[in-house]
Image (cartoon, rainbow, N blue to C red; front, side, top):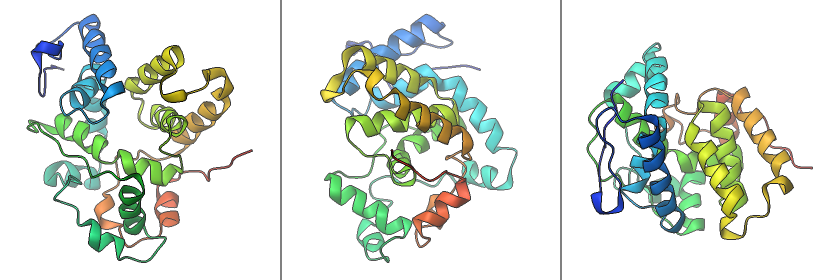
Length: 234
């Protein structure tokens, strides 16, 4: 499979050449991750980080989606959850407990806006990278993991188990060494990461569902459809 930059910013070393070596992909991924630590929504670093570290993983996920009618439809129609494509006001008016209401409430509570992608989707792999970024907020809602630093680490552990993304390992390693944003030493929450990873493995791929069709469904029903085990805290 060929890899190339979906977007670039050469002055920061954010550029992925055609068919880069594993070392080059790792180097670009680390550079992007350092930028994302200070600017989580950086429009160049975010997509390039995913392409550099997991381009082939997304390619595998695309092949899996092509094996089902629902997956082929998703890749053909390429629905988006970008800012401007989602009516948060209408979703907020849905009954409490529905996925749409929880999605709108998530953005209100965190005082953020839906993701906006600055780069062209050239193929199915690019689309799936973009789709993963757009559905990251839904992953928080469906797993029950918070948006604090520890909750973000749990989401990473979940998607490692669920999708096999190497980027999650890199993020967890980065956090373990640098302990950004007040994170405790990783050994203090390693049990929670193991549980999150196990929940991810036990669940259906979170990229298979066309969430736009489930706004009016209770969150619990969507969790059951994906087979996500209930969140239990000790």
